[in-house]
Structures are given as structure tokens and as C-alpha cells.
Image (cartoon, rainbow, N blue to C red):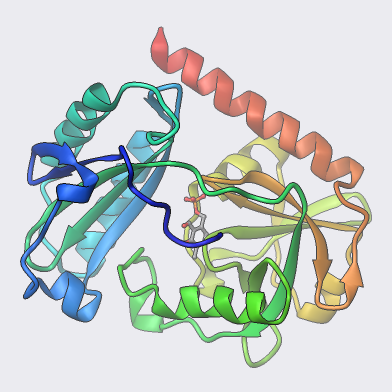
Amino acid sequence: MMGMPNFSSSLASVDGAVMLASRATIPATDEGLLRGDGVFEVIRIYEGHPFALDEHLARLERSASNLRLPVDVAAVRADAHRLLAHAGVGPDHELLRIVITRGGRRLLFTEPMHAQPDVIRLASITYSPTRVLDGVKSLSYGANMLASRLARERGFDEALLVTPHGRVLEAPTSSIFWVSDGSLFTPPLDEHILASITRAVVIDVTGAAERACTLDELLGADEAFLASTTREAQPVGVIDDRRFDAPGPVTRQVAQDVAARIRDRLAAAAR
Ligand SMILES: Cc1ncc(COP(=O)(O)O)c(C=O)c1O
């Protein structure tokens, strides 16, 4: 089943105190809960080592600043290292979630990875980004979660968010890339999409170009894939009633190259 994982032996850190995730609590009056007013990050943990922790903390700091939310990033970093040291390596500790609430709570969790299909089927869902939240990875993800749910109700795996004017944006928790005439493209950030860290890795590794794209243009592409912390590069097999040969040759190469870049950066960080 998709959705939030169960937290059987996952750990949490609440304002620096480590405990079982199932024991973690915050006051019910926290506006992070009542209004979705807060910011978050999800970081991949490879064999106990976080990938791109600095980029995630930098985005957390930008998100919080844009939301006018105070955050002590040095304390979050210390919490993260303490939590990961307690967690060690294991299937319940493959992701690190960081949540900063308006009530001033610093919550960190280790989580298992969600099961992902090898090839994903997307349904286009009409979506308008909330402009005032540009540059904020906010806790207000109800619309993204609903888009995924609507796609699953229609028999697909995930949503592809498309504006009312037909512009392709991203998926609810991942970026989209496509291949046209042998070249790789992704929508630009000024389409009000998230500055995805995996998207930046893919662009760096492949030289992919940023280009605005309509749904019709995307349906005419040769290949497509999603990119995110949890998926790395995930081939797209279907968008609405268009089928793609997946993984296509470019996607397969990109997935290998991105995985190699991640391995190299983890190895460099361990030296
Ligand atoms: C809306 C959205 N787009 C893209 C992504 C992928 O970002 P990243 O590569 O930093 O995981 C996410 C991650 O959750 C997201 O929420």
C-alpha cells in the first residue's frame, strides 16, 4: 500500500531527544498540525549515510526563511547526526524526514522506503501551484496527496500535475524529465515547481535543458522518467492513454549515471 509507512522500529528525535517514532508527540495546538504551517525535508540514507544532507539543509533553511519561520539549522544538523547514529543501518532507517513546525518543534524521523514500481503509470491531474508558497517545501501537502489519490482512483500509480492551461509541472513528490529527439528536458523552476535536489543531480550529470512543456508535447516525447530522493530516476511507462517503451535507452543510461554519481559522492563524503 502507498502512503505513509508504518513506524514499527523507526526512530524519532523531538527537539533533540531520541525515542521510538511511535512515542513521538507534539502539542495538538501546534499550528504545524492545525494549519500545515511548517516546512519539511526527506533525505535518503544509504547504508547509514545521508545523501546530499547539505543541500537538503540549505533548502530547509530557504523554505523556512520564505515562510518567515525561525529554524536553528545547526541544531537540526546535530539532531540528524545523533538520530542516525542511534538508528544505524536497517530497513526502518532508509529515509530521514525533518519537520519544523510553526509551534517551534524540531521533529526528525527515520523511515523505511516506500515500495516503488519499476515502471510508473501517471495520470494527468489539473493543479495550480500556490504562488505565495514558491520556494517553500511546506507542510501544506494536502493538494499533492489528493492528486496522487485521484490518480490511483483512476487506476494509475501516481499523478502528473498539469496546470489548467495544459503546462506540465511535476509529480506530487517528484520531478519529471522527458526525451525528445535524443535530448533530455525538464520544466524550468519558474513554472513554480520545487527545486528538487535529484533534479539538480540529473541536470548536472546529463546536461538536461530546462524547457516549458505542454501535456500534448510530453505525450509526443520518446521517453519520460520521474526523479526524486526516493526514486532516483524512475521510468514512466504510461501517461494517461499514451504508452512509453520503458525503460527507454536514454532513461536506462541516466538511471545508471545518477546512481553512479550518488555512489561517488557518498564515497567522497566518507573519505
Ligand atoms: C513537489 C515535489 N517535487 C519534486 C520533489 C523531488 O525533490 P527531491 O529530489 O529533492 O527529493 C519533491 C520531493 O518530495 C516534491 O515534493
